[in-house]
Amino acid sequence: MSFGPVHHRFVYFFGESIHELRWPVRPEEIPPDVEYVCFERSPWDTPDLLAEEGIEYVCDWCNDDQPYPMKVKQGSLVSIPYTLELNDIPVMVIQHHASEAWVRRCKDQFDRLHAEGARNPRVMALAVHPYISGVPHRIKYFEAVYDYMRKQKGVWFTTGEEIYEWWKTTKP
Image (cartoon, rainbow, N blue to C red; front, side):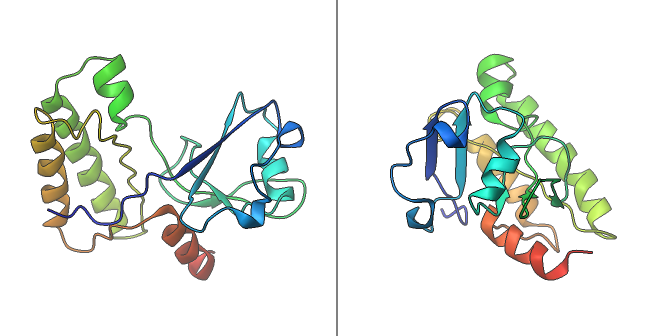
């Protein structure tokens, strides 16, 4: 069974800010399939620093269901929607909800965003991890959510980069 585009490539940098980092390679050499750059202990000025380095978008600001331009001192940076509410780590591991509760939460979120998306596109991010949602006693719940969304019209299963590229061509 295929679940569409799935990316597990992350780059983690440790330091207080991008200026304290020692990039493993120059930013332009980060492989194209790396979608996400994460900082351990990110300061509030991280968006400014990322924009200065040419990073075009981030996917970890949990505050909207539509892409939007972030205010940065120079350059540009777009926030691609992300939510902790559907992330299997806090829901199942930290809050100890049953898998059925995660399915209900996903379906409720999807139904609302799908209805609102008829007028204005919305993004629903599902952060799932193979060692949590992919284990034998939980995979059927992930499949149920995926199958539920797949049966609806007008749903685009995509990546953060593809959302960013779409946003660049349709932004207000």
